[in-house]
Length: 124
Image 1 (cartoon, rainbow, N blue to C red):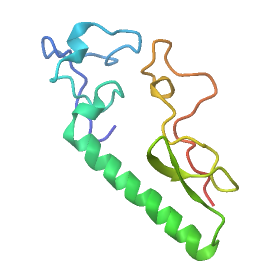
Image 2: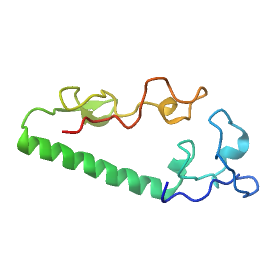
Image 3: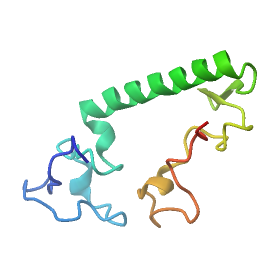
């Protein structure tokens, strides 16, 4: 990832080749120093993470406005568990804005089979 530093072991600062294994939940990974953007387990600690997500949210809103202009009414907004999202339909394949940690390699079993976190919205 372009903005991510080298993955490091938070207990000693040494570079780690593959970052944290998705099955490794040792205490050292819970330290605030573990803010590696390349690992979904720790990326939310890094301040840049929230800037990325704000930018992504803005692009999703741009996408919605473009659809409203050229395909009015084809994409419907709805709230899912308190999060603004869209109703499933022609242009929206995923009915939940948060697919969970298992789709990002953070769950105890790694990625869930058949779940791709990047298939949120169908491109027109």
